[in-house]
Structures are given as structure tokens and as C-alpha cells.
Length: 98
Image (cartoon, rainbow, N blue to C red; front, side, top):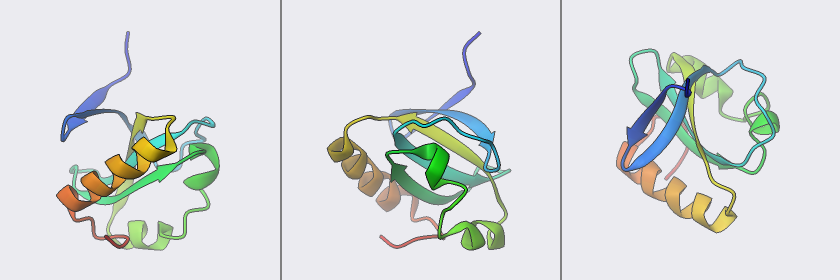
């Protein structure tokens, strides 16, 4: 059985996962959402395991009732940055800057 997933702006994201999950060391793009699916933040990382628990915007996530993370695996840093910028522009998240 495959992991649950969503498609957002043409990209497939696995999830939802609790933002308090002990993630694997993987590179990709993540969406932080409320339980209703509102995107609160978009980011990219080389190491999801280290990035999420130590994220400087966790307080913003909390203020905006974020509870879930969706993840799109992408090893290329160049592609992560391009996709992150595109998705951030499309979603206009409450946390972070454009």
C-alpha cells in the first residue's frame, strides 16, 4: 500500500504527517498546513530530519494552528529552490517571506 498523497500545483506531496514526526534525513520541499489544509508555510531543505524540529518559524506555525506537513522529495538544490519559490508565490503562506 502506498503512502497517502496530495497533488498541489502539479507536484505530488506525501502526507499528511504530524509536524512533530521524527522525519528521515531526506531532501525536498515541504508544505506546512492546518488540519483543514490551509498552507501556512512552504520550504525546502537538504535534511528534513534536522530542519523541521529546529525551524525558526515554528512559533508562526503554532500561531496559525499548523499541525501537518506534506513532503515532495527533490534531491537537486536548484530544483528545490525553483519549486519552493513557485509554490510560495502560489500559496502566499502566512509564515515566511516571499
